Length: 80
Image (cartoon, rainbow, N blue to C red; front, top):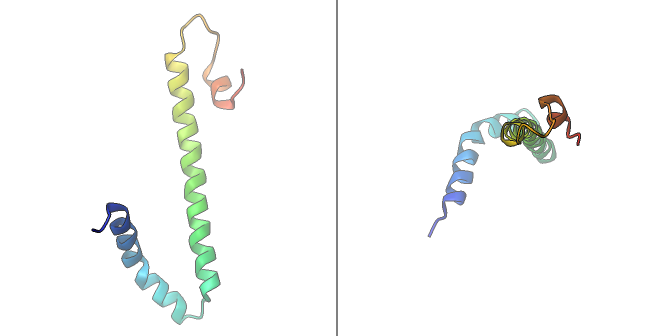
């Protein structure tokens, strides 16, 4: 039985195959391709972390009772 996660990874690999073929034909090594893909993954992960941090900080500020003196700037900075 094929799992959904495996199908998703396979579909991404199929979409990127033409790019990999062209880069390989132009002389890119396997190491260079892996480095590029890992770099792209890290950039996306860092961007997602910043977006989630801002969303979480805003949610915390919205749900904290008004008696607690917290501003959006201190919540985003992680100050107590």
